[in-house]
Length: 462
Ligand SMILES: Cc1ncc(COP(=O)(O)O)c(C=O)c1O
View 1 (cartoon, rainbow, N blue to C red):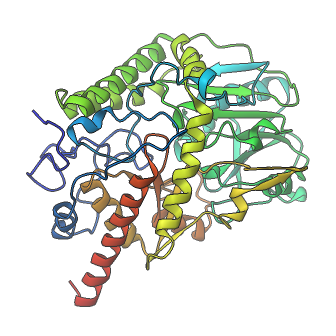
View 2: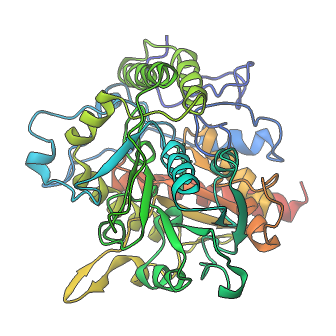
């Protein structure tokens, strides 16, 4: 039984022989943070380098909860286990710490909305509706986007075309002369880094516009959107077993509500079971890693299967139960701490626009507010090899970093070289409400050590 010690598997430093990481963290996902496994052996990282990191890891930092801070689930710490990133486990919300006590987040979709099983469902339902009722024939999409979503939208039958837009290269949408009747535009608040001026730039195309607010659904940018429609996958920022949403700030017509399909109901239950079992694993070590990973992977795969589904009743109710405003604030504190701690590490750079002024305080009339809170800290590495080493070294220390998104085999080939290059060199470090600020220092410390190892290896030619 694993009783939760920091380094709780002393066998092969990277796998336990069946392709799974011994720590139980979903380190080897499909590059997008989904709880799968596999990428072992594809990286150029040497095991001895990784082992150096593993052996240097001590106990987790001691934490003193600050007064007035987000209630944090730290039950897993009873046995000293620690991890960063990975799939959500079931959060333990103490009584009296729900939104009524900690402050409710203003939901941008108050009023009329449609709740779906996933973000892809929300987008595909809207695209199908637009094709049927608004004459949509072609969708402009950003070049830097989740390819799983592109593939799902392509299956609706709409023609797809791209405009340049990437995390550090915000686009202005297509040239007006390139647009034609039947075009519609998708704008994405990529990684939660976008600001109002960037949104304004794209709005000038005059096309009907859909916005994807997955990476910060409760952002002022979403709440004050004047877009035709907005969608978000809610399960990416909040521990929900399923959930996507569609609303129309301009009160455009929405598709008819979709029932929950049997496949998605089962998928949601599998994911919920995986989240609960993972929580028990963290607290006691009594649940084997493979048990919840297998369920999580099966549930994730099934969430993409079958027709469009509505959101399960339990996910809708959980949405009202979670302290989302407090969780967002925790993410912001963690983001700032991690971004600052990474700032001076040779070989890597925090790729978050002109952070902090861009993100920290944006004026809206006389009020100062944040446009969005980033999804995580995007780290741009000097080379793809360094990114691979960092990813693998962090994984050995139970820290998940993901490539959001791999563009090596895009659905549409016309991706600018610079965007593919960014995708190869970037890693997203998670900083959500599961973590405290001190833990962010720890993650940055690991990155610093890995960069040092990489430099040392480069100098000695090993
Ligand atoms: C920005 C963005 N939009 C939409 C989606 C689709 O969400 P879902 O996986 O719930 O379909 C994702 C998923 O990765 C995403 O990252």
